[in-house]
Amino acid sequence: MAKPGASRWTAVSIAFTSASCEAAHALRDRRYLGADAPRLPLKECTSPATCPCMYRKHADRRAGPRRAEDTSGIRRSSQTPERRASRGRRSTDQ
Image (cartoon, rainbow, N blue to C red; front, top):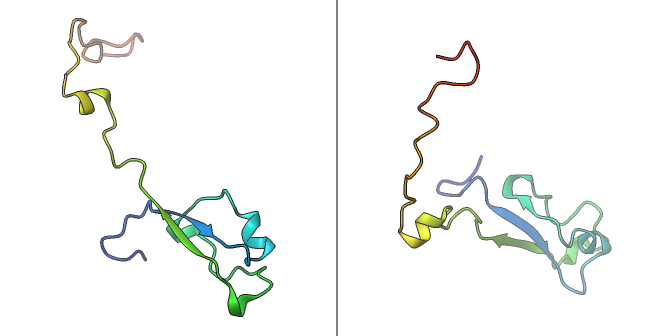
């Protein structure tokens, strides 16, 4: 269960140092959803008692404006009629 207030879409990766094991280095470019991330120390870790690895959180990419009109403040002009309001192409559409 996620912590209250935590996003279920939080992304994390394994942050490692030069003293980290090969298993951590192998996961260099992998990102995981927070709930799906492997537990630390990794199962394959060669020095679990002194493991320097930790999780690095990544910002939610969906947090900002998603459409051009959200950033510019200018709404798209509706020169063309709304197509979704018209009847479909099939003979059974009403």
